[in-house]
Length: 249
Image 1: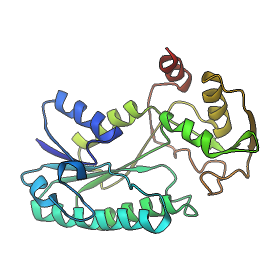
Image 2 (image 1 turned 45 degrees about the vertical axis):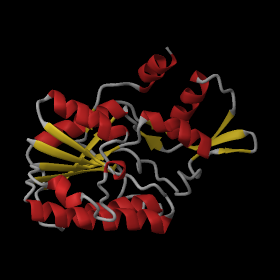
Image 3 (image 1 turned 60 degrees about the horizontal axis):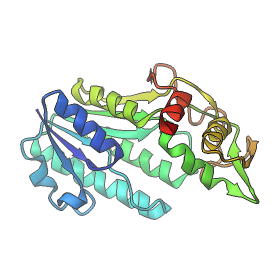
Image 4 (image 1 turned 60 degrees about the vertical axis):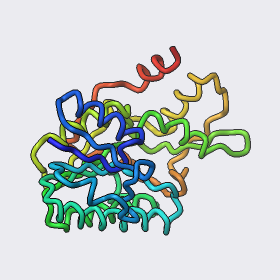
């Protein structure tokens, strides 16, 4: 089968492409750097010619509220139109666990808008919501640095390794359309501040950690289970501490 990955040269797109090729499929890694831009429409129709499946793992270059909403709404509308014209049989999109529970976040609002556009498009589709990636815990820690300490939420998160995201996404891509939402997460739910602390200590960073239920997540307040999946999510095997140990080695 021919599979087109929108955002195919990024972190998840590159890993997904490699997995799909090992399974014998033709993969086109579409991205602006390769002449395919879903937001402007450049090269989109040509890229989808003859495609059986399209997977959207693209991400906005700006997280500013209006910019990120425009990126996902415009890009998704253009992609839906191109998919309909090309006769693609399965449209897959990667999203985030909690999109419908964190609308105070401009980024999550934009991802929810993307999900709704796909769900209402009439296309055969699957949306895979993933929890936060292990690789992003360092950035979460840095976002909470102030007054010589690292402030982090005590609400729960259940992160997973990007390799595991790609593996779950490959299975969804090659499966039958769910015409709905699936979720994937790591094996351990714990306070966000706990993951931040473990990451910092592994880096040799002895910064004081200030944990609190009211500490926002990139400016958005969290409830206890905002960032953890519902029952029925696929749980991937890699544990955070095992990843930390491998990364340190």
